[in-house]
Length: 560
Ligand SMILES: Cc1cc2nc3c(=O)[nH]c(=O)nc-3n(C[C@H](O)[C@H](O)[C@H](O)COP(=O)(O)OP(=O)(O)OC[C@H]3O[C@@H](n4cnc5c(N)ncnc54)[C@H](O)[C@@H]3O)c2cc1C
Image (tube, rainbow, N blue to C red; front, side):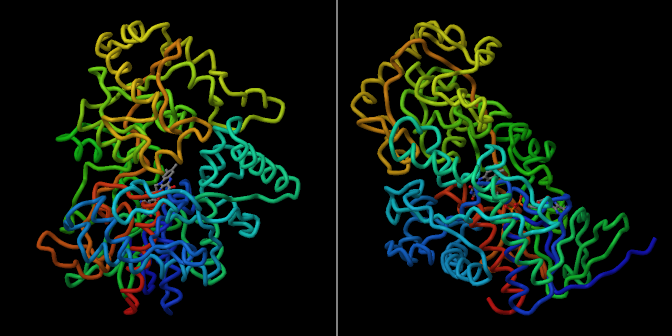
């Protein structure tokens, strides 16, 4: 059967942050882009995510008089990532830092409404160039009804899971609503916002859903085509240049040409168990079973680029998220590592990392140390201090939100182990009782005074920010001393893979001889990250995909 054929200036594969931003930048530059998305929903992991974007020296910081600069951003990347390599080359770091603020201004001019996540520190704010005031921005709570018939076509985001119209900047505060007046007032504001908007018949999109929803609305208003249920299967090459893709559209094989090029923004391969196992075999096999990433991110487009000769890097790397159990994402147990009275230990019963640091760092340490899983150990003071929920209860079940009410089933089925002494807890978990008791004793001596001489937990503003605001002397540290004690395994979950094709500073895909493959661009988790194997701040990944999507579109338009 002959293919149907359609022609555009830019063919964009994937409707996550990189795809949506690139389409808007291309349209604004006078080009005709098309977005192809294989799922029935727009947004990808970007839409499902917290939706923060980490952009040094962004215009919202400037408007609020927050001190930052290109040079501070550069110093910070150097301090966190270390020496440049190919995916995180000096030129790519410079491109990210120079284009990030421009992209934010551009998106605002196009009508995207953002707010500054005031006080959400960089993950290493205590490093040179780090910012304790924070460099993240996020989409405002936005009424999805503006999308009309496209409203149900935006992928469900983080706030939907919680059942509240909560921004990512607010979410951690919900766990401490009985601890400080500030947390109580924030929680009250979120609950009020949720119920008032419902009474008004609004459908508030927050987090990544706000970002993806707003951008979709702007694109639709501009007349940019977004083709859902359109799976790209092949890259089309003519005369050594990528000139388009083959996809199945409305059941028919279709050749879609891109006169200026093709942007691969199809996410990572976190949901492809074979690829995950293939690329993690040498480090530690992980088939992605704990991934929270978008189910559409199955890596076939990445495989097509590799088959074409694209070079790859960091293929065993992911944006690790320490995960207690698949359905417990974003729960009380996920935040335990940031709170006092809780530690991680390896299978030798020893701590191995600053538990409160970036999830990517902790996940890497889990791999580098003893392998996965590790154990979360906490005491009764932690149990009493937090609500044991990962979803807002219905009004008539509100009592469930009272801190301390750990569901009995979780203890009864043996998932969470409980014992009167640390030694007995060790016996239940096959850990060495003496080693675990030594670890806890040693940790407690520092924690009582608010210090962690071994790993420096609680030193950075970031550690303190995500800790218990009511806890003194350190919001991130408290002894594990109050019986009974509890333990459960923690797995290396992720929100996406971080390895992929190697690109240059214009987002052009490079071949194994470091030459751009003509016509081929990549952004987001399709490409090896500009941040190397690190994660510098809240929203680094959405920033990475959007900024390089923006750069790619402008380069194809001859503007960048
Ligand atoms: C629950 C959760 C919370 C997160 N929180 C944050 C956060 O707060 N900040 C942050 O920076 N990062 C966060 N992340 C990670 C971040 O969302 C992702 O790493 C990032 O959004 C990836 O963007 P992308 O554009 O590369 O891919 P995606 O946004 O996943 O988009 C890729 C799209 O391509 C589509 N696609 C795949 N294959 C094909 C094909 N063959 N044909 C057509 N379409 C295809 C996919 O279906 C998908 O829609 C979070 C992720 C999750 C899941």
